[in-house]
Image (cartoon, rainbow, N blue to C red; front, side, top):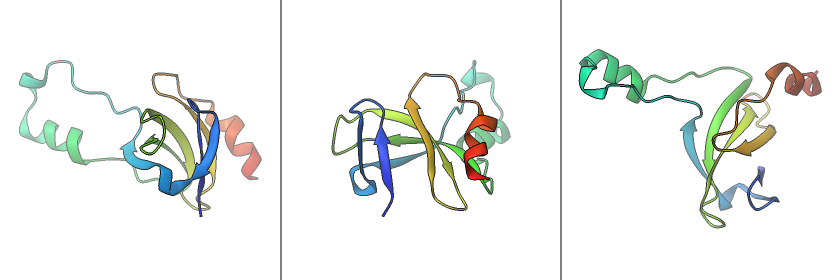
Length: 100
């Protein structure tokens, strides 16, 4: 079972309390009406799929209901950190030092 820390409730709870919400830090186009079909396809469907640390978005659906970001290692499934939505990305180098 995965345990996830909610940065708003300050609780670590089972994964069943949360919902995965996709890749974090995906920016919407500035002028959506100027986008081509190919650009919309890329924005809507093309995401990173790294082996290792990945920036993800989660929602505490059975708690506070808020969205937050997390860094999860896709190989070990270990959550390296969680942080509030809107906060800058944490330094990946300092987080991955704990994996080695």
